[in-house]
Amino acid sequence: MNNALPEGAQNIAIQLRLRRVTVEYGYASVEVAPDLIQAGSQLDVNKLMQRAIEMGQSPLMVWYGEGQEVDPHPTQQQRESHEQCLVQGKAGFELI
Image 1 (cartoon, helix red, strand yellow):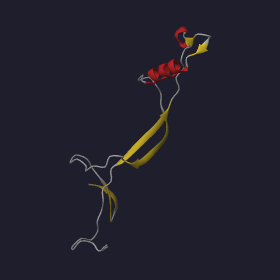
Image 2: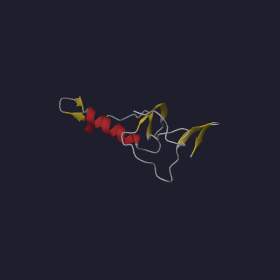
Image 3: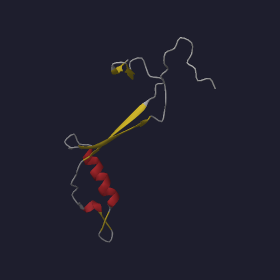
Image 4: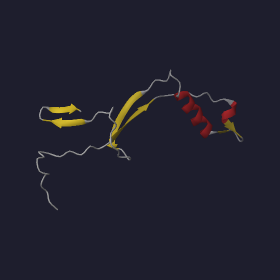
């Protein structure tokens, strides 16, 4: 394999599509209504969780930042003309 750059090239760069996932948490207090109780006075945990998820969709829900993960996107594709790309130039990072 030839490790030389193509004639006239000073460097080569490969664009990778990345994905950032922001993780947040919040609290919802779910009332234990009669429809959450199963036979034998057991709490229906699935219904409880579903009710909490529904409450979490409210615009009044308060969310707190927990962290972020940046990974290669599972679908690599060429960027669209309206999308920007971060590059490292001589003066540091810049967008193209």
